Length: 309
Image (cartoon, rainbow, N blue to C red):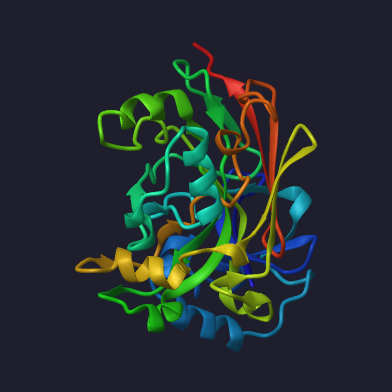
């Protein structure tokens, strides 16, 4: 299933799933209130709610609560995750980005999957405009994939971590590289270079849909990024050095993970301008259209704008 959050023409915001390529189900309306109106509430009891969906009659586009997609505005599928941890799990990206800065790989990277916390209150959805920070000159995109936690757990082993994953979506970890570079010289961060915006969407695909593509430590899913229609980045999720199960094991050590938390993979190889270099493409500027595409997960498009003052 592909879960979405959307705004109706009357301004009501609801959650549900895609019925087909042209229709979405408002799960609250279609179930007569048996299912919640938002995805966070759904995730907090997802096993029971998924069984309830399965017990209902198959939906058609004639059912109550089913809407044409062209009458809806898709929002971030999980508008306010409970938290957002972003990992650093693709070796090619880490090695190349460090080489470009004259740095060698550090052995500690191979010992533990590392992450930072970003701003879970600055989530953007498909088609939303991304405001370029006024003090940023080096704006970058980052091509990533995220998993959404669907079950509470603590001290989760990697062997059993799959059952805690609800689904996956595309993630764009927007980065102000000049701000990030300066603050990390202090030995803390990234923080201000990341906190202004993160895009996810256009939907969350439940993990069962991806099982046929399981390969290596991830899935055989092509990952691409285009700026103004020009293909710049191309990688594959199967190249993860650390699996999402290993990331969950690390994140849950001594800490409880809750339904609705989001975990990012970090950038895939070639997946940002920092790694590609300015000779390949300049930093992003207002008017640029950035499009991330991952097989089976859809396309996430956003435009850069200048903040009105």
